[in-house]
Length: 314
Image 1 (spheres, helix red, strand yellow):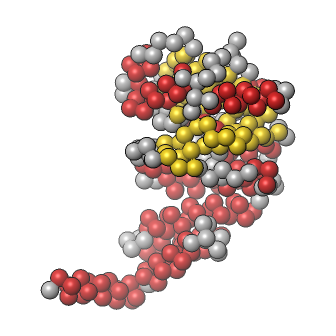
Image 2 (cartoon, helix red, strand yellow):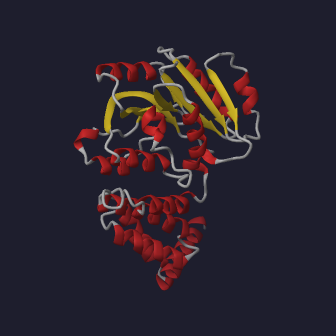
Image 3 (cartoon, helix red, strand yellow):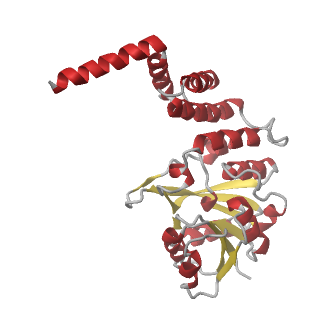
């Protein structure tokens, strides 16, 4: 029986998945199984995966696309490891990722707990920077998971915890937040490992950077998470309002200059929910945009800009 099970859900990530798989096979701690759930990919994902000849790799392909939460749950259901870790197909772990978790678990006498490590951010060109990972113990734990994105690739969770607290297939965006909040709410101990052992790659074709409807979707699923019965009274109001304000801010930016009514609705909601601005700066942008979106002011400023460009070109 392996000590770790690593679950990778993948959908049409053939150009990225080799690096993810290699990062697991190159781990300094070798007692693991790697479960890859191919979510009905239409590219050459299978050919890429089958090129790796390692008995620890388990490959399953869904008959239809069921999204990453259901795919992760499918991996959890067949996992044989005592602890379950995750990785997305366009990210990768550093070689000591599993060894670091194993050492921490050993020091803690192998608890029934939720652990997470710190991480790096990396651009597609390979430029690496430190991801914001504040000290967990210095914050309200519910505020922490609402404020600082703790992706599943940073997790190491005792398998038995998932018997009651799997990913919710109805929450396909912000699912990391939803699942970690529910595990926390169930009373399981959370440990943070300060070492950065995994790398989050900002792929241009990912949901975070490539989905035009990202903020509409995020707003919908945040409201769904916040309305869950077991979480309603536990989540700090200000932390929730900040996230909702963030969504409305970006939706106002999206509607700026061409959808005036939508712009003002989202701008006002963003200002009302979190007056200081979700990152301390955004409300200055909102006030300027509101000024320019006023019909008379907007037309006047557009005319002045046009006149300025014309005189500059003469």
